[in-house]
Length: 471
Image (cartoon, rainbow, N blue to C red):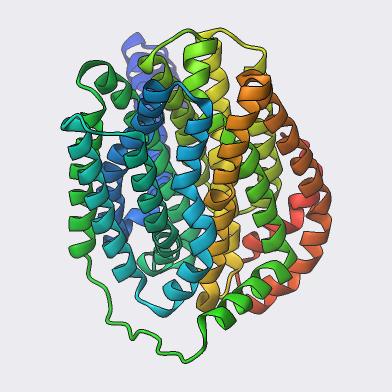
């Protein structure tokens, strides 16, 4: 009986139809396992969208940011076409960003006092009005350089309040702090997805319909984020009534931010990179036209490549289940920025430029998002607005000085060498930050113990100083 069964089993397993069926079942099982793994990965990447308010914010802001990037690309191109001046490019960049440096400390105090939701809603409405005025002047054919400078100052003032409120509001939309890093990464994914789409669309519209249409699309896009904010359900929160003077609260925020070395060194590196990489943003129209001998579409595709690299970086950060080793990632990211800027100095090929700018965009996104995540994780809630105001100063407040410096240097030594010097200085800052990592590891360990944050978060900074063998 046993021999008969064995004989039957042998004939069955050697039957061609049986083999084919067995193989098909194995393939289907493997495909099902792969599909489940991919689905699980997607759930990890987009896990913050399970929160209704954040889901509304993400959808509305995704559309609005496409319009914002269209205006950001169209504006410097128009200035350069109107004037042909690198210096005026720097002045317009300066006007749009200097308010963040001057007003951010006050904005941080008021963000800690007021409802961050109301501040964000108000800034979006005023931003839409600014875009409507810019579109009307352009479509009417009366736009002049002084209009652009004044309106750039206006949007800079708006952003000085918008950015601290926006960054701080993420904590209120995402209920579980374990998902905070993912939400910040998704914000970056959203921002850089728009940075990928907006410049490419803007380049096509500039070549066909003109800059006025770009400004009009931006104005209309604000309707989506305004609607999303109005549709949110938020708990009623009492606004803080404090008799403390604003100046005293600014001093307290400054002491807290720069008295704690991990926050201090992250913000100082962010400020240096923002200052010196401003030439990358400001001089791209000049690089596209004079070095690559292209037009508005060349400029749009270069900025689109930057956005595509940044989008990949955002997806990578969002797929991480914790903030483990983010401290070590920061100098790696800034190294990519430095290498990209230096490589552009010696390149005249359009295709290679797309490759280089994609890597530079990858580094920029990972640097800013990782810095944001670590700072927000270790900051006390009652000082979050003020800390994020100094983050805004570092990210946007130093950029206007970088814009002026880039415009002046480009006129004196040319665009390529201006980019090279900016990249070299960023690299020096990267090395300095890397040497500080052992000190940061020792300082931050008791802070995470006191705050009761998950162990993986602490290890992210603690292991930051270890040699990056796998990188």
